[in-house]
Length: 255
Image 1 (tube, rainbow, N blue to C red):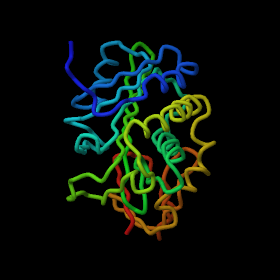
Image 2: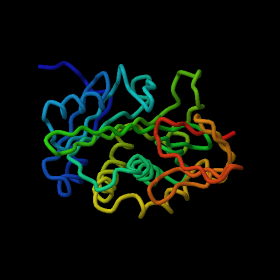
Image 3: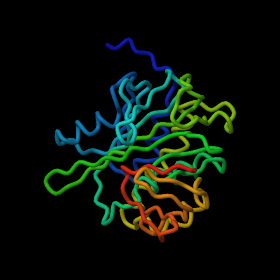
Image 4: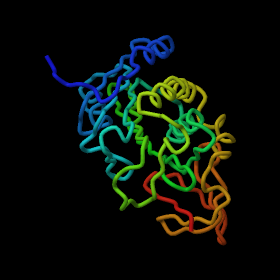
């Protein structure tokens, strides 16, 4: 028997009831601590476990972001989870943008999006997304990891200043945020699988935190951000012409 007492009371049953009709076989697992929810689901996928699942970690000891960056937070200050499911989209391009858009629209009008996988609020980072995939026997499995600041992190020496959900949602905690965002997120993932990103382009650009700003990219381009195209590719108008950036290894920041 485990003597673990959850930090929060998680609405697992309500979330399961809202999701299982559109995602048969769906399950929810809540862990007190793990290295990384994404790492764990990728381990399971490589071992042949491809069931649809929501894995919530109350604390991550080795949470990962894009380009290998770490994601850390005090217990209860952040919501960290991963969703894994069998996935066969005809075009993967723009998936992380679709995830971000769903989260932003669920959380409220204050939340903006920064290509390719960050949520911002007033030019500060509210959260991040990490999408990974495993392929086995011609079948693919996607793992969508999300980290959101419920309260401002104690760590202040951050590359980008932090924002938190409690700045605009009074009384929020991690379970309330999870319950609000999970069903719409899974619905968005299923719609993206069939319809791709083009149907979301206008909605993404309406929340784009850097559209219209002078930006610089880590691969040496500078110019005005023109938003994303129908494949979710970032467009920068430079003195040399329009540059399109499709690599998640390239970072873009306002000048």
